[in-house]
Image (cartoon, rainbow, N blue to C red; front, side, top):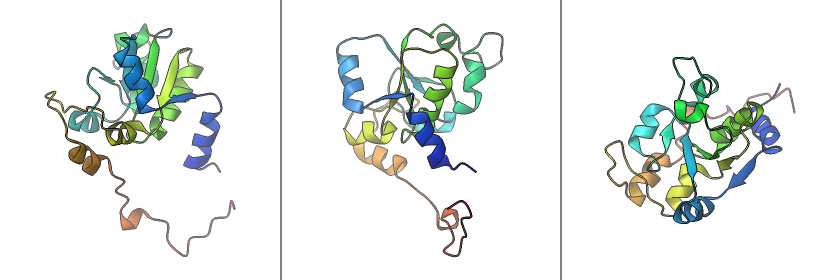
Length: 161
């Protein structure tokens, strides 16, 4: 049985990653970069990188193809465009990049550290009304919030290891 960590490790093999400062530099240079945020709409509405588009990972495969309810025209024509995929931490986006590469996207990279790293590097985020998000607001929202009931029980037996 594969774990989430196993899936991420396998996806890394064929995926290029960049850091927030790399993306900041590309944007400052005026490079044509499509920022694809694959978080859920409620997450995107709270805060996102300005001018990014939101396509949740759950509908990604149909969103990049024509003739589906989820089709996102900007993505359907973007197989040769420079795309940076983002999520909260860089994990969901890593899997999304691996999937999109399988679907023929050529110039696609993952934002390593995700919006957490973007915020920690003090780069701008906006809410759904395009109002700026403070560093502190970003830190509070993007923090890891694993609840006690979500933690592995101390008596858990892992038969795979």
